[in-house]
Amino acid sequence: MENKAPQPVRYMANAISYVFHPLFIPTYFFIYLMYLIPFEFASITDWQLKLKLFSVFWLTAFFPAFAVFLLWRLKFSESIFLRTQKERIIPYVIVMFFYWWMYYLSRNFTDQPMALKYFYFGIFIATAIGLTINNFMKVSLHAMGISGLLMAVILVGFYYPVNNLVWIMLAIMIAALVMSARMVVSDHTKNELVVGFAIGLLTQIAAFVWIL
Image (tube, rainbow, N blue to C red; front, side):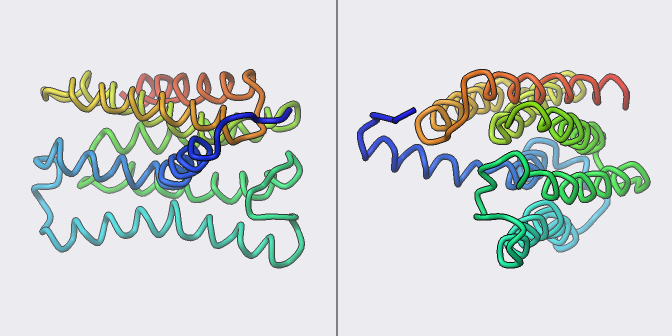
């Protein structure tokens, strides 16, 4: 289906898609927790907190992205954009491994906020469901990621005694921007976007209920 959006709109939609790429979502959520609930990190030094942030980015963004790059260079995929369902199978499995590892670490170390435990478990479940549904449709990873972030932010307000309204409104605005951007520049159908959004929301709720 030909997209008739003006070129400036397409440029902006591509920029939004890159900035809020699904691989960056765990890093963004960790930064959000650093600013909203710093008391959860009171037992570690600022330097240790920065190392934790770096490790989140390293394990959930850099390594999965590097794996996709290697798959492309080794001719296992035609591009780094993973445009087909077949090309997404191995990256799904790789990301699942790293998300499970992050959940395992958060569950077994006492200095990890509860929010990280349900968040990591939620994105692991979302990836597993996404891999399964990938057999039938090319569900939107951007939609899964941004809706997971949105619901995770909402659930923080249920667990912690903090004023979270501004962050929730910001998350809603970002989610709307990302979904709009994907409608402009992606080749996803509306059903693929809606299914991805639903997966992200529901898996965070399920993880929150399970962990607590």
